[in-house]
Image 1 (cartoon, rainbow, N blue to C red):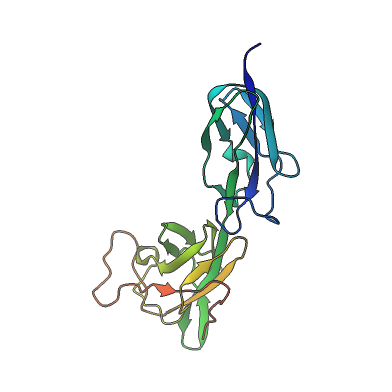
Image 2: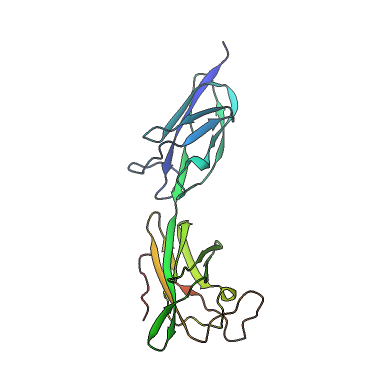
Amino acid sequence: MRPVGTVGGRVFIDENENGVWDEGEPDAANAIVSLNQLRKTTTDESGRFEFTGVAVGPNEIALESDTLSAIFTPTVLRQPVAVAFKARVQTDFPLRAGSSISGRVTEKKGDEIIPVADAAIRLEPGGLYGYSDSSGEFSISNVPRGTYKLTVVPETVDHQFRVVSGPRRRCRCRPGRPAAKRSRIPSRTRGRRPGHRTPAGLANQGWPCRHRRPAVIL
């Protein structure tokens, strides 16, 4: 009889991002975990998994990310484990829930507010993008927790612009809580399509924003 041990663990939503499971943190059910890319199991309703009869020595546990909800990002996908005879090794997989940032880009023409379509909104740091639809609405999904700044990409707007109204504080994203953001672009002052340079003094201005405190168009 060959010497074997057990490997078990939990897949959970790490809400406070400390890397360990804390009482009350949600678990991720129905996630697939593999052992040495040979054996697979699915987490139960408590996010737990277990492999028995694991050969003593070095092994690898992996989490299959495509079995997770798109709003969750694993902090690690593969973990080496050293299994001892008749011992149980605990290996957990913390997940982080991304937030979303949404808002609207509009243009002011006199007393009229007109939506701006097809404008690209860049999130920094991170380099994520969102694009405004025909009503000027945009949304950036799966944003990790952090502090960000939004910028209108000038090459995606068909004339020169400068931002005259928008969130005045940085966006602080927390898991599962959307942040709404607004921007207004005045007429005759928007950016240019790709291939054109924005004249000096008319470059786009990023607007800082704060999560849960959406700016209102004035």
